[in-house]
Image 1: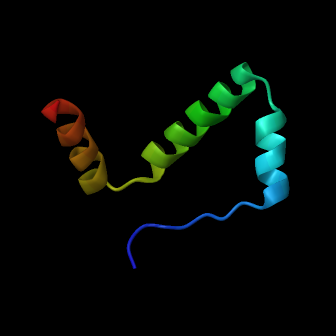
Image 2 (image 1 turned 180 degrees about the vertical axis):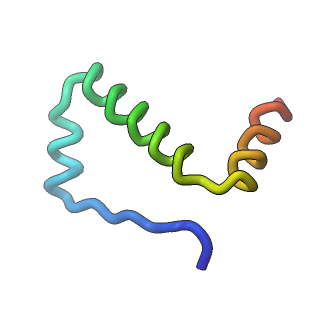
Length: 54
């Protein structure tokens, strides 16, 4: 299997929902940076092509 999976509990979802919007946005940005840093060059190139396709 390619890629990875990640599971969160109902408690984790509730904790995220309790965050203010600024904290949620910071969390999302950190997740985006981590995902990009861990992706292979092939995947990163696919993302670049998708963004450029408009």
